[in-house]
Length: 634
Image (cartoon, rainbow, N blue to C red; front, side, top):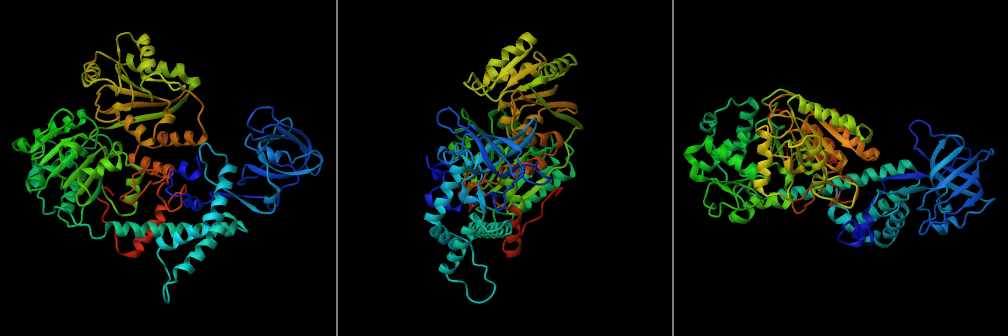
């Protein structure tokens, strides 16, 4: 598979738009061994005299090691990276000098780990280092991209001249061929700069170009779209009918959403609030009020249990409108199209043929872009509801293209202690779980897989028996492969106190309320996203008090995964966790036709994160798409 296909690029020439993530400096390689200095890269380049060459006997890789000495006679062992090409290693002979790059350690003797013999052609130059691509070595990516720049550079530069607005401040706009030539020069300098300062300057200019291209495309996508339905929505009477004391932020959010429904431009709003903050009441009030003014409303939820729960609550609040509030699931609601408000699962997309004027998507992180858009279309008002916004949604908020209403606090006071546990702590973690049960609490244990698999990942079906041996008759298992009756039986047993431990997949991520749940253990936590983990953690202590969330790592994980999970030990706020998720996973495809909700796919420069702050600055400077107020609680 070539690199373009691996990265799901539409055309091979787009490979020429992959930019370096950094540059390795071989202009002045070290001649004497030393450890890295503070702030310096941990991998250093040395010019060494080779004493011995030991090739690996393994098939398909060079590997092996070199024994060399520096300019003052200190001997170093260079443990070679298996990715070093055999053709390059063949040029290394005892008595000759070699340029070697590696991570230096000093134990009993000097050692270079994952050492690379560098092609002599790079000496005296900066070598581009590209983002990692799974299944490809750094050298393979570099050779492929540089070849693409040579072959497709002019065409890629012409593409940039077409999609990036000309920002000439004086005189006539520059001709396309002149602009293309300028972009071609920038591309060449980005890959092969003369200095680090030049590399930084060029990459900054290309990031600015990406920001202007994205801003222009977003403006064009939003231009001329008018709401299919809009009009004043009176909500005061509906607020009085709720048998709960609503918080000021809930009332404020209701008024903001109602005001958006009166505008001719389609609403794009995010209703954010942590688990237990009362989001359902807010959108339920506005949905019922809008329906009485002739608006067709669709409310989509990720599970039958949750859809049924919301439907029942709306019927209880607005009993006189029972005929206009219908439930649509896989097995019911076939004649619900005429209802003013339809509440349901993705069955809505198949049963409710007419597009809804007002689309509400609860637990938006559980749906794909196509599913969310299909409920209402481009001319519908859209309200997305979540405790953990996906990276794309949060990016649109930061760009001012989606407004946010934030619900402050929850209806209960609780504190959840989150900690990371490694394999060595397995026994103490089990002891803590059993102590939770002895103290009258319940435990939820999450596994990433449902059944037996070929990897070392533990599964619900395998581990359920292990928990049963510890607490005979007091454990239940639940996963997506079970029928609704079996799932409900397991949950009912927990709610009625006939079980103490629920072993599950992420099927319980949303919509499950277990009042006595005091501890959740997530096994192989590194395999879950931050937003999913925050949602699972939200199942604990739903009635208040102290709860525990244990993120268990039965196998070693990389530094990046460990640092990502540490975010949860420091943060309880779902919005801050979502912001960290955006920084880690990038924003995905921002334009309406894009489907990816995170990552760098669809960006002007593949594999390069889009600078959201820079795009926001461009949009703000244009004056054509001002951000609306941020809503309740900011």
